[in-house]
Length: 224
Image (cartoon, rainbow, N blue to C red; front, side):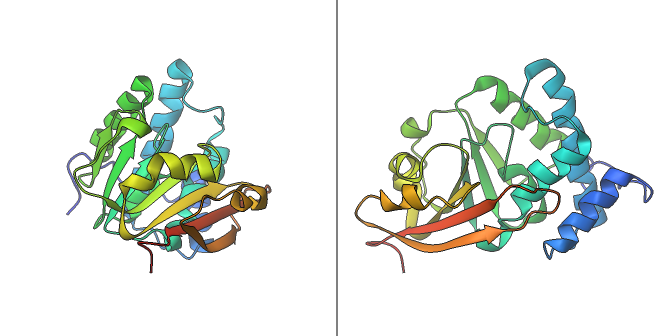
């Protein structure tokens, strides 16, 4: 049953809906009508707030679909549940799109920027997402009551820097995911002792010509 807060399913002739549906299919994802509607509502909400608060430099709806929504959904195979932290979420990326397609998992979206946290909180309400918490706190000061099975960052800093900020949040056996553009070999060469790279995956995001990679890392003392 659809949440009373969930937006109505989009019209079949909506070109943006078609681009999102087709792009998701190329990623191996079959979106339900309700998920498609939620993602499109998020795109419109992001555009509305960005006119005032400059949440993102990407404004064209088609580019928001490719460079934000599909870019976020592309890492779905690498995310391990059931507890996921999006550290430095900004305007809710990649956490909000992932929370839409993974309703059985719990997501925490963390960012110190009050303006962006207010937007993400409003988006959670308007999309009717019951599996998302928003934490407005600096990453280095954030102390969750329970660790996360996956901690993901997107364009936050070097791998070593973000690991230093986030490692205490990863539960035993958990994973750290770094979303990157070009393959970050130089950053991985500077990886601190105690970590091991599980995978460096090249991603083909529909509509994005630039390189995309995701790096999966575990702690040697905790990882399996």
